[in-house]
Image 1: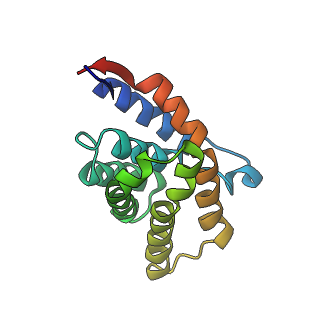
Image 2: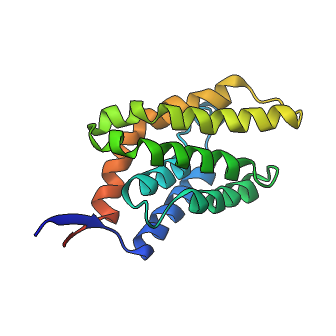
Image 3: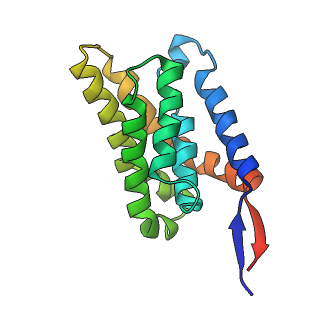
Length: 162
């Protein structure tokens, strides 16, 4: 028998609620500029670890929550997060072979696609966003990925025999 990692739906939703709260937690402007995108990182974590439960459609609906919370055009974060989830799903075999630190770097294409989609839609809508506000979170998310992934693995995944 082999052991696999599984998570209950309640633990998955709990991790998403915690990430959502941390996303909307007010920070001083000097810290907010580099705030890691923990909610998207959590969705991407679940796409990587539980693709049969969390996929592109779940990422889309999670993105709608961000759209409502940020009062951005409906579908902006949904599209960006669905695209990032698709990239992670396609890169899943590669990501499994990497240590967590390298996973953070390997996730850069998905994180860049997420940020660029937001940047592009903001440009279409005429909303000007400072480039630091758009791209620094991509780097900070990749940097905190190993720690955030360890936290999620420790508290939200349980080992079961199959």
